[in-house]
Structures are given as structure tokens and as C-alpha cells.
Length: 63
Image: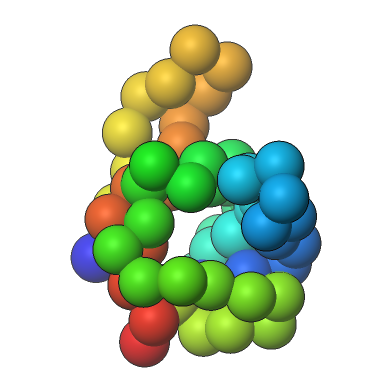
């Protein structure tokens, strides 16, 4: 599991971005990849899966 911080999340549109703690890369996250509800600045753990436009964060949980 990777660790990161929610940089942006739009609840009405159902997507956002998570910044990886180790690499500082940003990954797209969709509401379908969430286990817990998230908000901006939340600390989370997540996994990565190849999506249509690159890697997506999935199985996102509050840390």
C-alpha cells in the first residue's frame, strides 16, 4: 500500500487527485476507487491500477 495526501477532491463530480508521499507523483482517483469518504488534505493509503489515461489510485482508505 502506498501512502499519500488528498490534494483535491470534487465530491459533486466524484474525482480528485492524491499526491504520493514518497515520489510526490499525483494520481487520479475516482469515487469508484474509494473505500472511505475522502476530503482535501486527508492522509490516505492506496493502491495503483492502470487506467485509460495512466495510473489511478484504487482501494483508497483513510490512514
